[in-house]
Image 1 (tube, rainbow, N blue to C red):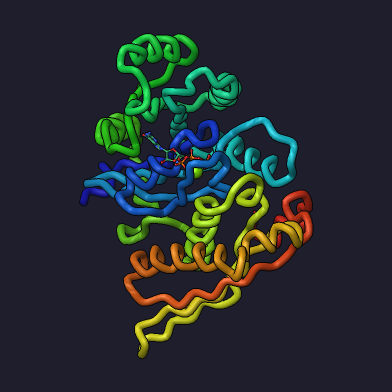
Image 2: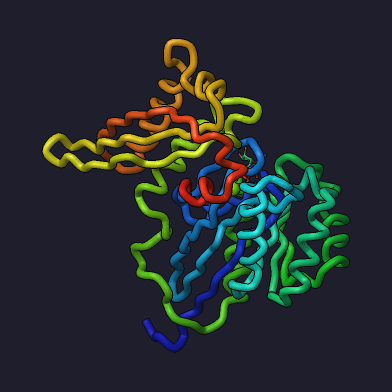
Length: 297
Ligand SMILES: Nc1nc2c(ncn2[C@@H]2O[C@H](COP(=O)(O)OP(=O)(O)OP(=O)(O)O)[C@@H](O)[C@H]2O)c(=O)[nH]1
Ligand SMILES: [Mg+2]
């Protein structure tokens, strides 16, 4: 490949919570690097996902959803999303069509304007909106900000994602191949595993429990002679009553979470997995910045 013609760029994926940012990142890469859930505030850390094209490379940065908040954990999540504007070449704002009036979008557009970065607006979830609303919506947003492109799509149904890639490609500048071709994400194996477990907690538990849960690794051991990945992880919750819920009657809940996580990890790592989960109380960790840091936030 001619090094001088190579195109590359860092592209932020920002937007309100639940807009489908992580779904879109996984769709763009064709593999799961970011967890997804029907609840807002699923993503807590920035996640790098690298798209390798023929003669070009796009380094996407998935971020936590931007929203108004007071809690320590969510404040740090939102700050990490807002900082990303200044660190990328292109900002991709993603909103969901059925919630295009969310007032937080205006404040995101303000941050975008301040950054002065080239930008794309993705209107996601067109499968859940009315077709005839789309053109006026595009016109309204073009009026609000001089986006380089506005792309309606459905990340879930994989409708329009290829057009987004074409548009982004036009916006890349000559640059180095930042990452080797076999690298798809910057996440460690242990972070990926903890995220998959967290995804299952979001899926199976209710009300505040997902938001009060964090996962850390005690042990990851490859046992090649048994073709086995042996994992021991901890689920941190904020109170004894939450611990009782996450364990469930006769251990049913923690077993359900563990089985779902194990099945997905077996597919992901193409090996048998032994997964041991332990619940532990880390009192009010999401309000305590020291504890948050210990848990990776
Ligand atoms: N109908 C529909 N649902 C979608 C689409 N894309 C994503 N979703 C759903 O929207 C929900 C949120 O998706 P995520 O990818 O976790 O959203 P996110 O923006 O990363 O959310 P946070 O990390 O919480 O900020 C999930 O239930 C997805 O299945 C889409 O194109 N159409
Ligand atoms: Mg997400």
